[in-house]
Structure formats: C-alpha cells, structure tokens
Length: 146
Image: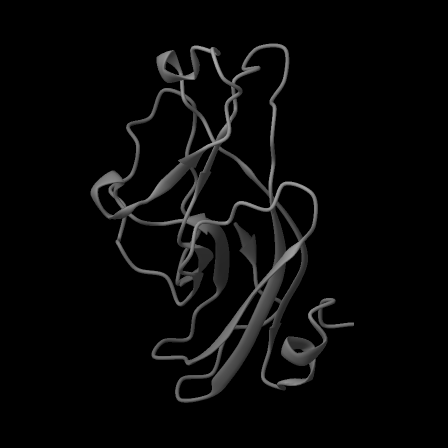
C-alpha cells in the first residue's frame, strides 16, 4: 500500500499498470513458496489499511479496480497488468495484491515432484514499474509513468 501523490478526481478515467512476476522458491524460513494465483491487481482506498503481525486477517473485498484475471505464472519474465477505471471516489491510497477470498481464487502448484509442498503452501508476487495516471501514455508503455 502506498499513498497517491494526490487524490483521484471523481469521474476521471485513470489508466493503471504494473509489471508482476510469480516469484518461485522462497527463503530459508519458507523454502516451499511454490504457488501462483490469479486476480493479482490494484485496489484504491480512501484510507490506509495497516496490518500488524498478530492482527486478524482482513476480510477480502472480492473486488479490485484493475486485475489480471488469469493465474500469473511466469517466474522468469514480467507480466503486464493493466487497465483503466473511472474513479467513483477521491481515493488517496493504492494497494497491489490479491483481494479475493480463497473460494474465488485459482492457484497453480510449481512444486517439484515428490516435494511435500502441501504442508505450508505460500505464494508471493514481485511488482515493478507501477503507474497510475490520467493519461493513457503510461499504460501503453508498460514501463511505469516516467
């Protein structure tokens, strides 16, 4: 989550994009990060939504303003996630992630044969070149707004 440089204007069309990569592998604590999921996208909000370790997980809104509907499974290259929407509020924050319940989420397992991935399945996505603009130019380039 990040604050926008200025609030969105109600009724204005915004063009949004970012590059995403389905990270594969993990780290020493969680080496079994071998899942990819669909519906990675952007959600705009009026206030920040901090979450601290130990807090209950927030209820997913089952909505995103911009989303990639397929499973984002490319672990080598960058996938362009892009779209446009008309602001219905003067949003002040943007979140990037997956905002849908497990029942509405599709996943793909990357784990090698014989690896017991099921005991602690995890997924994460790398993000780069984020653009939120009133101009479609950033959307067309797919390299960010600048």
